[in-house]
Each structure stands twice: as C-alpha cells, then as structure tokens.
Amino acid sequence: MPVQDLREWIGRIEEMGELTRIEGADPNLEIGGLTDLYQWDMENPALLFEKIKGHPESYRLLSNVLTSLPRICLSLDLPTHLTRQEFVKTWRDRLKEFTPIAPRQVEDGPVLDNRQVDADVDVTQFPAPFWHAEDGGNFLGTGNIVIMRDPDTGWVNAGTYRVQVHDSKTLGIMISPGKHGRLIREKYWAKGEACPVAVSFGQDPLLLLLGGLEVDYGEDEFAMAGGLRHEPLDVGAPGRRRSSSRARYRRTSSTRRGRSASGRATTRAASATCPSST
Ligand SMILES: Cc1cc2nc3c(=O)[nH]c(=O)nc-3n(C[C@H](O)[C@H](O)[C@H](O)COP(=O)(O)O)c2cc1C
Image 1 (cartoon, rainbow, N blue to C red):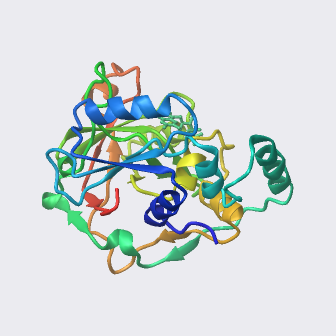
Image 2 (cartoon, rainbow, N blue to C red):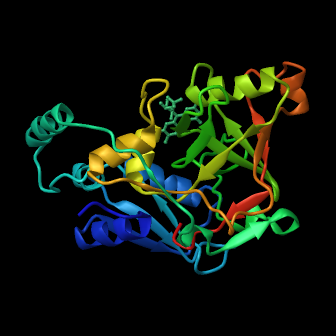
C-alpha cells in the first residue's frame, strides 16, 4: 500500500528505525547545523524537530528526508529491505512497465483544515530556519514543491525551488535560468501578468523526489507520482472551501529594472494553508 501523505510517511519510517526526534532546537543555525551533520553520509536517520524554539509546540519540521535507501524505497513504493544492486534492478524493471496515472481532482482534504486568508496571513509563524551562516535570510522552503501552470498549454509543473521569508506576507522564490518554473514565469511576465503559484511545504516525499528531478518539459510530475505508486494522487481543486484570494508571483522592482541576476521575485502570500505535521 503506497504512502498516502507525509504524516503516514513519518510514522512508517519511525517504525523502520529511520527517524530521530529532536526537541527544543533553535531555527537560527542549530537546525541547519544538525541537518548538515546528519546529511553528510547516506543512511543516517531523518530528523523530526519538535518544540522548536520560538514557535508553538505543535509545529514540527522534518529534515534529511531522502538520504537513505530504505526511505527512498518507501517513497517509491518499493520493498524497503533492498540492497543497492537489488534496488537498481528493481527500479529498471519498474521503469519498463511504468505508465503515468493522471491525478484525481478532489474538492476537499485535510490540507484545507487550517487556513489563513488575506489580512490574517502570517508566514513568520512557521519555523523557517536560518540554515547556514552565510545565508541571506530564513528559508521556509527547501524540501518544498512550487506548482505553476503553463498559461499556453495548461500543463502543471511541480519543481523544488528555494522559498525565502521576507516578511509576514511576502515570500521569495529562487528559480535558476532554464528551470521549468522560470520558463512558465517568463510567459506570464511577457504578457504583463502576475504568475499564479502554489507552494507545498509538507507533501508526500515522492513529490519532493520528483520535484527535484529533471523531468521533461510538459511531463506531469503528479501523473508520474500516480504511475509510481500505482494509484492516482489526490490533488485539490477546492470548490466551496477555496480561499477568496490566491498567491501571485510578481516581479520585484529590482527584477523589473533587470537588476536581479538570480531571478528572485516575491510571492504575496494572500492565502496559506497550515499543515500541522510539518
Ligand atoms: C532540495 C533541493 C533544493 C533545490 N533548490 C533549488 C532552487 O532553489 N532553485 C532552483 O532553481 N533549483 C533548485 N533545485 C533543483 C531543481 O529542483 C531541479 O533542477 C528540478 O529539476 C527543477 O524542476 P524543473 O525541471 O521542473 O524546473 C533544488 C533541488 C533540490 C533537491
């Protein structure tokens, strides 16, 4: 049975002895430092930070997610006891019979249980570590996926791009030249339009794995995830519970003037969901 969400994934890896819980860590360099120590070598456990300094007790942060073969296998819905050679053979066999399965649109889901809309939005309530001493700020998104729709074809891309907190209602997304999210963004901006985005910070790790892979332009990561787990992924097409406004990705004054080589832009977080497990 494939993993259904991040909460279930955390439970399953804990049963496998692949999780270490850490209480009371400081988002300022301590979470980043500990994560660096653990991610240096493969097969170290994932880290679940709890009771994070300066944040409500129930807010948790997971790091070092996909750095062990058993955890990668679990995420790909493969047996979790494979050796490296067995994994390569099993993966090759899996790719031979691989067929994408389109996602299933649903109207509702637990992701909509906790919401902040418009003036209530405060993204600073979530633990966003200052990961490394030379970082330019606090990053809420490192193992996230950024979801954007091609305005010409309707194709939806999911890519892993860093997300920085600028203030309670503003996030920046760093997309390198040539990445699909960047190409999509340019299409909107060429028409003088803001680019709509959704960012997920607490998804099934299979989507993180696919979001960080170079998948061909036009390939649907959600359909690939469905094919890998042999059942469609539920994606939200919220109807009556949809928030009144959505996030837009727009040029900063510096990118408008062509001063930002990094392609930084800001997302005005007009609505944000608050998953309690991340
Ligand atoms: C943890 C992680 C963080 C990443 N951060 C960024 C980033 O900040 N900006 C970026 O352009 N690519 C980043 N990448 C690389 C992209 O996710 C990767 O190139 C991916 O293929 C992009 O998706 P796309 O092919 O749909 O553009 C990151 C990858 C990983 C695994």
